[in-house]
Amino acid sequence: MPQQDVERLREVSVRVFGNRYRAELMWALASAGERGVCLGDLAVTRNVPASVYQAPMRALVEAGLAERLPRTPGERRRWYRRSDNDALWQCLEGLLSCLADQSVPVRVG
Image (cartoon, rainbow, N blue to C red; front, side):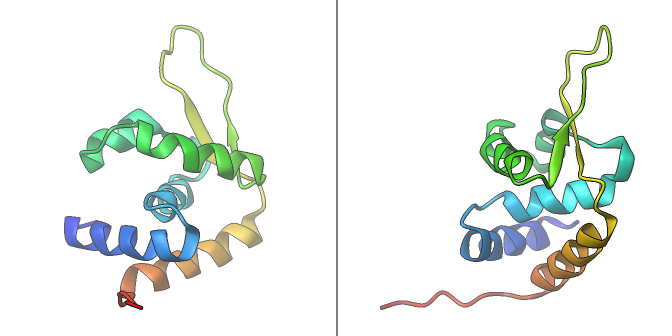
């Protein structure tokens, strides 16, 4: 995803989900499928600290939308994947795609 699209998604995410990085993280989970997402790897590709994804991931795990995968012996990275609810994730993918295409105007006052 081009950087300008990432920034637009972040702007929409903060207004819709209350967190600048939640929609981006959900998009990554939706795209990753069974292999999952490593927050550190995602952070490197997006040029942000991995810590920006920790609170939104914790919220997604608590909501049952994502799960923390057990560590593989010798693996230091922590992996997460989306829940097994394929119908829900198909809906979320559609929503995230629409949100990525929208620019939400800033309302003042």
